[in-house]
Length: 90
Image 1 (tube, rainbow, N blue to C red):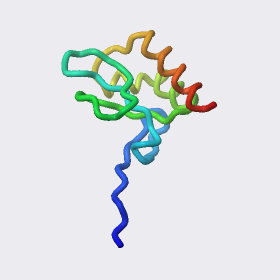
Image 2: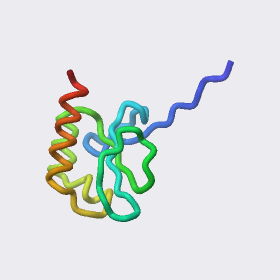
Image 3: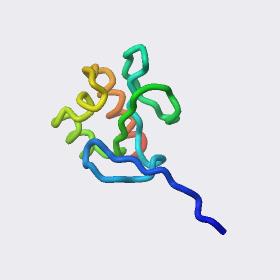
């Protein structure tokens, strides 16, 4: 029996590869709107981040999310991302 392919993505916070389903996607839509993509199927340019505060802090401090999405990140989105991280950790 063949092994099923597991797509791997790199976390922008810690730069390690992990299965796509273990990461949270932040996406910039074709219209330029930046949102969280909890389903992982929204169209647009996306970056992935582990659901850990350490990874989020590294990504924000190093401006990795902004650089990867080629746009500025609204404060409201960062607050939503922190809230989602706390919900997933519980």
